[in-house]
Image (cartoon, rainbow, N blue to C red):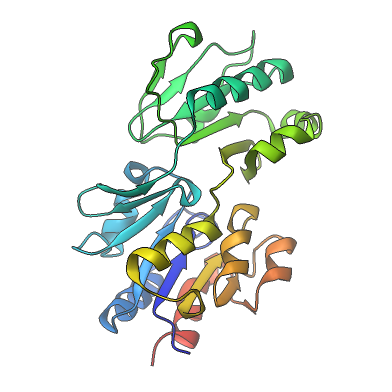
Length: 270
């Protein structure tokens, strides 16, 4: 069966160690588009934090789509307009914030335009500003949350060693209520239970009328696992974590060896 859609993760996958898209990867994406193949970037980032990458890859034309917030938001890249969106309920935001206080970890809430900064534990300001540069940070009072408070993602960003120890203390009930994903060594993300990159592919299937078996997904980290497992052709980067490699049907080259280009040329282009 021919591949009609390629879903590509960013960090550690499309981007090399210098956080750049190689000319080889750009050319492969361009060639795939010319053959009528949909190319969709899939990331935990908001759209504003990846616009420069989309533009470099010529993925901001009419009809181009991106999956952001780990599959929780489907957007037209040209306008930023939302096609499908799944967000937290206000009581869920409060629940996850309370857990952060019990664990003595800083917490941030992210929507389409802002990173909300509630009160952090004493002496532990969030390290998320070191990661997120595309959205402004605004303080918020937990006693004064608006009733309509659509939050796309909640993060705990702190030193890797302590964060890993604290993650072990999270009660199982929270894993039953939400999707918990470690997307960087120092970043734990909470998503609504109905969201992961694999379910994001299902949304794309509905919107674009493309079968899952006609999709290829390429990734490297734990938050890519669901889409690598879900796609008809799951591809792991050579630099991927073991769990993703074990789940993939194909292992391509590393992100510094233009692994995305290699996979597209071998399995997509005629």
